Length: 590
Image (tube, rainbow, N blue to C red):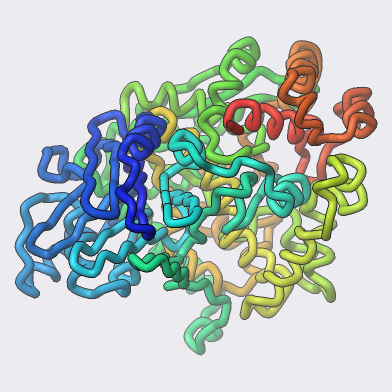
């Protein structure tokens, strides 16, 4: 787990090592255990290291293999690196380290670009071939690890975060109208390649990008998620599906124990994180460290789920840590939380993950987390109505979108109001999958797009702000592929995640399963009142906000008159969504 960045020149100039160093400095929180750099000919790489696998300096990066003529910077973990190492040794390769970075490097030499198809893990990397001068960038199948880039003239730069690219300078930070439409409509999800800045793009999950010394760029997928069922799948009954899910999830949890440091769990008390704890217990883990966070209640809404996390901690005898955040702690830390965001992310629980990660990082470097189960196994309220939908794209937008295109036109400056980009994107994506019904189409969209640029990005950004690695077993690609083939009726039964609940009944207290769906609650940011309302007013009163004039005053005034009356279908505050974007721009737009 680390931070990577670099510059690649195609115009004959030398790379700007000072700019690369500035990017690396911005990535320091992602890798507090070490740093390194490399520069030769038209390329310069830098790396910030968080030591998880092979704690020795033998796995220092950038990693150079002079015999093979390869240099790599890499962020992530290959859970099957030991098996791949053995396979490579049998092919005649020798190793100078005991980590997964060298395995990635030699796997590329042995199998070329197809090496990524052998990887089980989360990763983003850049690899330079000395002899050909080509550079290859790659990102894992589910986009768990981020990879941003900017390209202008003969200069190409990449980094693990968008702010790191900005720190390097010479980036167009004007607002991308398409990204703004997505942010304001698609619940702050900005699908790749777009970001809120015109000059920054992100590599889509499951894709490789190749750049040649002549400047040619090629982006191509190496993985796609299919919802087509095999004959074996069609023959499975409900009991067999449950057994297959249990086996695949157990494998996913076991894989994510690979580390040379202890591994804990972020335990919300919900089904997903509780299943991880239960399966770790069955795998023989004892003295497991678990962590929960809670907030003060607001607007009549409870701010914690300690009742359930305590139950799981007691049941499986974990070493449990409860972190209670007083409301007066939230505001002083909000700007730091927003500063840690690679892109503006509207979910209220960002601050929860941020403060939780701060505490966890004091004692651990690695945790498992339950993100992804809702998108993969059908846990959200908008999936059941789509099962028999005749127009799933239209029905999905009514259930998910924060505002209509007409309302968007009343909210933002007229220069950003063009086409209905979010509806067009949704219709195109719904037509691009082999999923047969509306529910599976929505699951495919959410797993490959929404999940990547909302919950997964949130967890990566908030944990890595404190040098903490979060592993997500529900995004094991083999488990995701299996879940895609499960009949949708089994996923959405029992008010969502029915098949996963069936798995849970074999190992968890039923009280944790048979309860209303919970979220990571931060009520103060949903019901904006008192000092929080004053804080938001101050955000829009700043000279930068006045000069930017991104939002129309009459629309803002309506929201300020009664913030609680303007809640999105996903139960988010429209006012907070706009304030968050403005805050992020004030911090990061240079």
